[in-house]
Image (tube, rainbow, N blue to C red; front, side, top):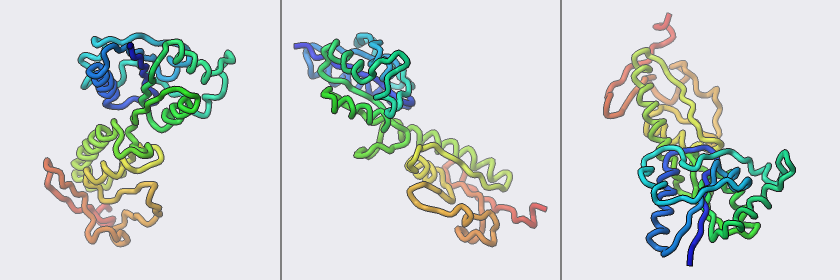
Length: 246
């Protein structure tokens, strides 16, 4: 008996989207005798407007390390899913009709927390849904680590490592702002890995005024330094006092 699954990627792209889809198809291929895989273009738009294509083994060849998503993606806010489009189309009903038209046994959805809300809406409508947690923010409930998160940590840490040398050369303190939506996982992991002196995240309340650049009022360190403890640098330079700046 043929098993039919659909797949789509929604929201912002990140590392491992293609690798995850490849893993899903490879796992099913090894366990299902007859399999049909349908890919929906540009996220939920493809499911709403019936834009899809049948995928073959060739589509998943050579994409293990390829960034982005071979299906394309788009942002479809959850709060607007119950709102008809400009032509009066009921989006939820349209998605259900596409699902049943293709006689899908399951729809695999890759996305973050917004995508997850819509996936749950479709589940409540009776569709068989599997949601795979994708986000650099690592903010999806019930998941220790989302795919895309570790790659983002590596990139942010590398950027911080590069800033160390400039900070030390000029005797300055740098403030680095990192993405993360409403949570501090990415900032915390990159800050620790990059050797940050102070890490501010929304989960821990803080008063920005208490973090002064004046060495006399800064209590976090007895002597203010721009330091780097990464393997490439191993150096430390004292920050100039206001008197020395004059």
